[in-house]
Length: 637
Image (tube, rainbow, N blue to C red; front, side, top):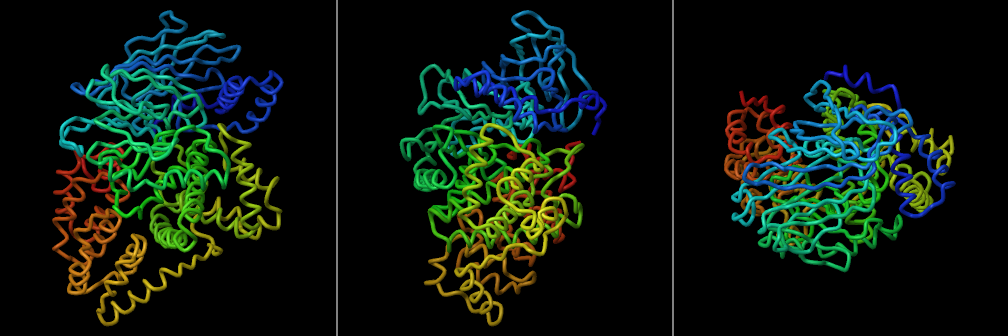
């Protein structure tokens, strides 16, 4: 990666923005000037550098966005003006924005034309946009259009949706893709409030990570307000033929009309989950909590956009067995959205906390035996993934990452999620749950709408939770700064999996299939444990017997299907091939794509993999497409 331009901008600490966001939020709550000074003193102690932004918020930082946009489906572009309120230092000469592939039409500062220039283009980070300002400048206005390089945007044709009649658009801004559709200071450490006006075709509705409409209007123009400060990666937009149904006074579901009833049934426990979360770690701070079920090309299970979680339809299993994903995205309303990782090197502070919180919500709503199944699956996956990742890059198995010079998306592995979870679980088991809950509740309250570094969190624990002896006992430094999994990984005992293990032993020894009256009571998690426990080599006849008895190849449960594809591919079970192809063509969730394509490559099925990918690639979001391109060695040239 080319860093010449960035080096010129790294002589100051990044998180001046903490002061800006903190003062902004304080002013909104009418605190005194004295409190603002205390806020500045508190937040400046956390300043760090962010290697994934060109912005220099010490000189000038954004505080509020007024965004006026037109969504053009015919030409697949957004035409917009971003009006940014800014704060400047006494000697400010420029403000720097992150951009990627944007066609800049006009730039003004305080209503007057302004000089601007661009730095060198970087394939991962785009290029910096430097706008000349003077001290005391209040607003920067940038008129622009998105281009084909807007990797955050996915424009779907009608046939790629459930309804097959209207196109669809959705965004995915995490980690540094917001800059591909909005000129912004694209760092998790820079927070701002925003308002927006969005014009869309009159047959569609627009939704954002903000206060949202509950139905279509006749004008196609929608207004939005996000009164709490958020970082750029939580900017989100979805446009399509979508309807809404409430679940409770503050929760609800958006989906295409043909999917809505199924989604509402699946998410009927939304309010229970919110109440469980609040009981653990304090009030939900964002007002409304809604979910939108997107078309299947969405690259992730979910995205925690404030007030409006984006979710994959692959969690609609029909039996509410995959709602742990909802608990995960809801938990982000505290860990991630409320207290945010300062940089993507501290990603585990978002995701490890969220997996821990997710497990606690699931335990509260569905019971300890249920949540321990989830924890057991997580533990097995962590051991497997850490070994695999460690072969290629041991450094990526550390909790504190070093992603400078790389796309931060490369840090999105199971390590920050699952190793982070077990580190926090180990702390809970060391100090006791009651004490740990009190600590976490105070942590979220103390740092709400602010950011946190790994080192800041260690210091906070040392002051408020762990003695030096306890830090040594849990091997704190080894967990955070060393590769691999320490030898004090917490043990998980799932009683429900004991019965599954017994069924597996019987199947392996004599081919006995688990009794139907038993498997009819199995959840998705018990099936995943059973399938994942199959030996690497399984007789084709045994696989066929399993398939015939339980319809694994054609199951409508995406988690079970994706797990089943692994032994099917590994052992050459040809009856699954057509289903595998159909699945890969129609589902864009990267969690499922990566292991399935990799299994094909590892088992001498490269020709099949490439043939499927040629068909499937146009259906994938850029996030999935780029990962699969690298995995498969694919090039359009």
